[in-house]
Image 1 (cartoon, rainbow, N blue to C red):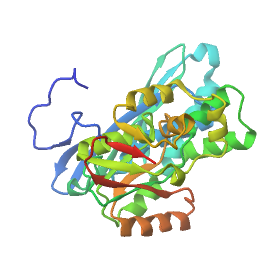
Image 2 (image 1 turned 180 degrees about the vertical axis):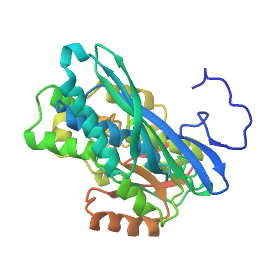
Image 3 (image 1 turned 60 degrees about the vertical axis):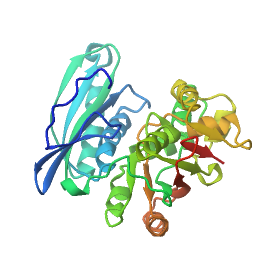
Length: 320
């Protein structure tokens, strides 16, 4: 980002690339702002239909993290059509189309290139009121921290690649990645979150540190209250850890203080590089308790309060 030119001063640009927010936002009228983002990656599961589902859910997540309602999407495809055939690509596109339809949005086109390594994702656009955009800054001392999906996605998807997961674990992590953050975002609308983001490639602690730095606060995260996917801890103990999670762990050492009781395996799980993770929210404690109860009542049983926000101290993140 530091090499990109500075944006010209434009009062309609509400959120640009200068911050670490999830998407860009542009004011169209006093009542309407356009929110745009894109994401794409190589396959992380073998099933092409589920790959399309996951890619779409992952791209749409950035809109939900900013409080926007998805409206349109464009497919982005790199695919070796002569090598893998049209049927596999058709299944990827169908998976994405079904997930976008589940979000009550429309795929209106896209672009493809011939590529020896398959890649797929979407550029997505949504609407939000200019005064109701959630940002990943604004966390306030006294808030508590909520996550809406369990951690361990990166570990389990690495386990899938290494043939180390059970069929049930594979099904569970695939379903979690394909799950939209729509319900979590819809239920959050009636509350007053201070800051919101979604947990993806930088892991929980990476996104928490961005929020803490941008808000000039510190955060205390309780590992024992942090939900994990079944089998994630055992796999990580056995060395099934993606390279991205290890890189996150090294990078975050300058921002995180771990309690002496937190093992290296637990540290790596908190840094796990995730695809299509849940929302990470800083919000008042009374609202958080009600919100998490609503999430549980609506089937999001892994949602939890995992920490709190304090005044700025020496480190941005403290794990206990």
